[in-house]
Length: 189
Figure 1 (tube, one colour):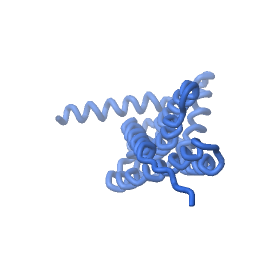
Figure 2 (cartoon, one colour):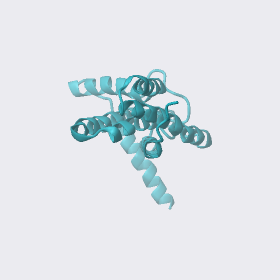
Figure 3 (cartoon, helix red, strand yellow):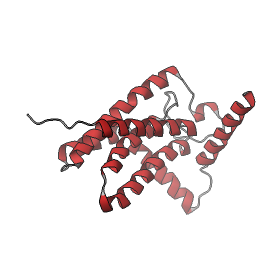
Figure 4 (cartoon, one colour):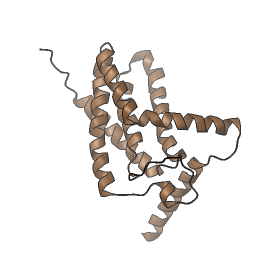
């Protein structure tokens, strides 16, 4: 069993180091640095909560309902995140591995699970579930690309391990699906 655990830990670290590799000055590396440094903020509370509220208040039906679902899913998804982060105080990759490159002012809170990844999946899944018809061909791939980009950016920036990101994606998706499928539209008085 110890051998299996060591293999999992070593494999995760290898994936992290590969995702975190930011060497070179080619156009591809400059684009990746720029993209991941910006897209990562789309998983933050400010972006997800503010845009969900704007959707809820300003968008026509059914998108206004989707905005409320996004807002509720983001809020609900962070309850288990807060509990797990408090209970399982995993160091961030840059804190436990000397060869990880990170941002100038990295986060200090526990690493597991990734809150940014949780938020972006909780935010995108209701949008993808609302899309219908020809919109599916645009919204679903775009939503998946955006959510996966935020998740990958967390590893690229040295802030999370792959399991942090996978757990965040799972919690965010599960929360969003629960909100979407158990949603009862508010009754106007």
